[in-house]
Length: 70
Image (cartoon, rainbow, N blue to C red; front, side, top):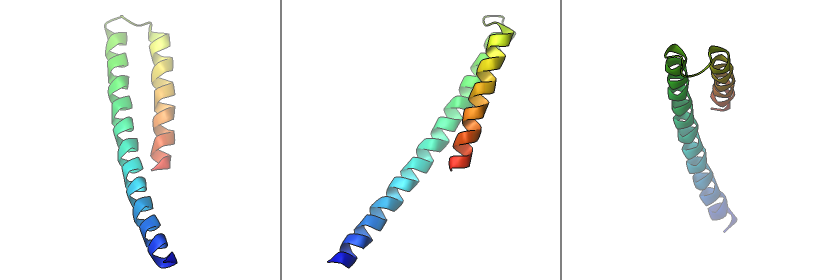
């Protein structure tokens, strides 16, 4: 009985880790797109360059954290 429980726990744990990895990758992709939008808005002068630069820098820091989590 204990062996079955451990096997099921390992299977479920593996799926959760896989799902988390996929979600992390999707989040990174979305943040990269957001960075592109901000950079385009800065080019079109819809966002102040300093503020846009700060946003992009912060987003890149988050991307690095997420990549290290993978």
